[in-house]
Image (cartoon, rainbow, N blue to C red; front, side, top):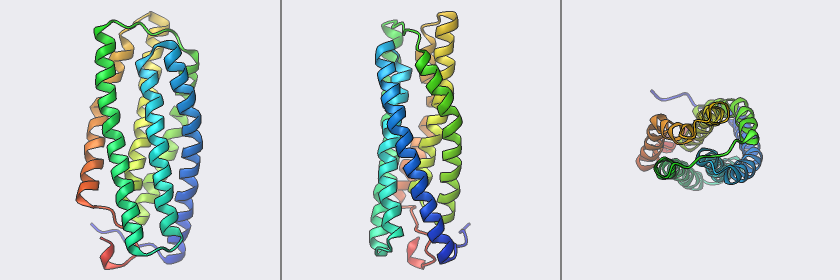
Length: 223
């Protein structure tokens, strides 16, 4: 079913909202990536490091999405908007796919070598904060993506959902390791993450490959 295009004024407002939400995402991802990767390396935690890498992917896709939205907001040609949209869709999809590969390789390696991560209270605190922030960002991105017809922004929303689920998985894994000494919980929790991460990556790549990235401008050539 084709959605009804927003009026020009409303469309401009939605684009500004999209720009603002991506700016918030970028700022938070810089903080999250630095803290998570640093704490993950210190604690020898694959799960916490993966969380930080996911933040880097979010940072990259957020930057590309910001470029895409600014391209349309500045009233560039339809061709320029579609080009930006297509590139943004590919970045979001490939970012999710790369995260899947990283999680599989590092989690299996951790379990095989019986790596025992140290307690990370910083990681637990970070996961709690992210668990509150990311669902809100994802909801706003999905809402705006549906209104302006952006498959790339919808893919970026999936990245934010990924971060939210990873936050919950991180919290459980670090919590079990801290309270019960279950060293293997870190690796197992990472692999459980793939249950929904792989379908999200596949969907994002399928959308990018199929070119399902309209600009919702109301022009018949947008689709």
